[in-house]
Image (cartoon, rainbow, N blue to C red; front, top):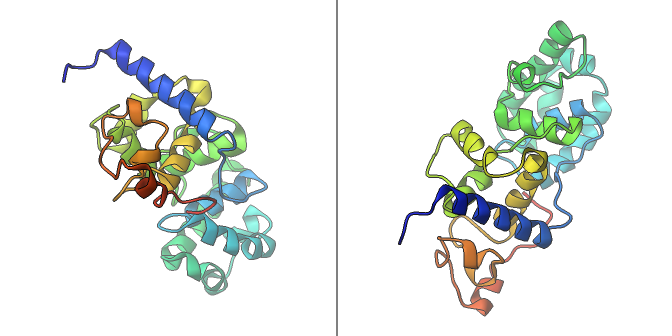
Length: 233
C-alpha cells in the first residue's frame, strides 16, 4: 500500500470529521454540570467510571458541596460515602478536596480557565483540563481519552501512544475551532460503533476511509448487533 502524503492525510482526516459531524449532530459532553467547578469534579469522578454512573452520583454531591470552599472543607468520610459507587473513591476524594483547596489558595476560589493553571491542580491532567476548558470555558481542546486514542490510531492518523503526542498530531489535522466538538464526535463513535474488541465495521460510516476496516465484522446484520445506543460511559 503506498505511503499516504501529508496533504492526503489532512484531507482524509477532515473528511472523516465531516462524516462524524453528520453522523453525530447532537454530540456533546455526557457529564451533567452547571458550572466549571461542577464539570471539574464530575470529570475527576469519571476516571475508570461511566458517565452514566457519575451522573447518578453528582446531584447529591453538588447539593452537599455547592461551592469550592465547601469541597475544600469537606468531611472526607462523608464525601467517600457519596462517591463510593464511582470506584477508587478514596483517591478521588483526595483529588477533589486537594483540587478545591488549591483553587482557594492559588486562584481566589475560582476555577482557572487556562490549561497551564488547571494541570497544576491535584487530580487534574491534560485530559481533564481540556474537558473543562472546552465545555465550561469555550476554549478549544482535544480530549485524548482511551476511546480517542484507540480511534485515531485505527484511523491511521498516528502511531503515537503518548496522549500528549497524540493531542499535538491530531491538533495539526483538525481546525482548532473544532477541537472540542471533534473530541465528542470521536468519543461518541468509540462508545457506539468503534468498540475496542469488536468494532461494528459493517455499519460504520467511516468504513471507506478507515484502514482498520475489517477489524470487526463487515457483514451488516452482524455488525448492527454490536451498535450500542447512548447515552452511557
